[in-house]
Amino acid sequence: MLKITKHAVEKIKEDARKAYPEECCGLLVGKDGVVLEAVRVKNINTERAHDRYEIDPREFLMVEKESAKRGLSVLGIYHSHPDHPAEPSEFDRTRAWPEYLYLIVGVRKGNELTLRCWMLDENTERFREEKIMEE
Image (cartoon, rainbow, N blue to C red):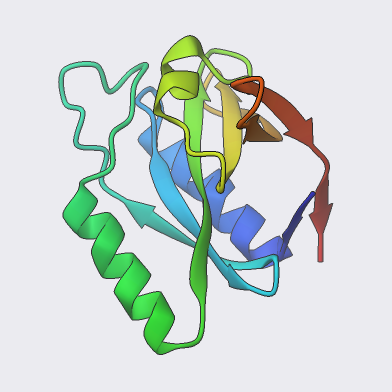
């Protein structure tokens, strides 16, 4: 289950709208299993930004270090799917880590938003959907 603050959800929706028609991406930062912040990071996949995202490992590490200083940690990753469902692609699956939650925002025509959360099952190597609970 993904527990997330309303503020973080609104930030993610805003990021997805602004990035459209390209994919946005960011990190879900929190504590005790609750996402408190959504930290947007740059999508460094410039060749296929309309249907792929890639996070700069240095930026990931920087967010991780800054979060740790405040007693927080990276709990997952979010990204958008412009004009596609909020379901993981095969590309998403091959890049996923089992310990992270993946929040995907389906963005239709730049405004209609659908949020779904996924977690990779290490044994089956398939995603399972997780319930989203806003706090």
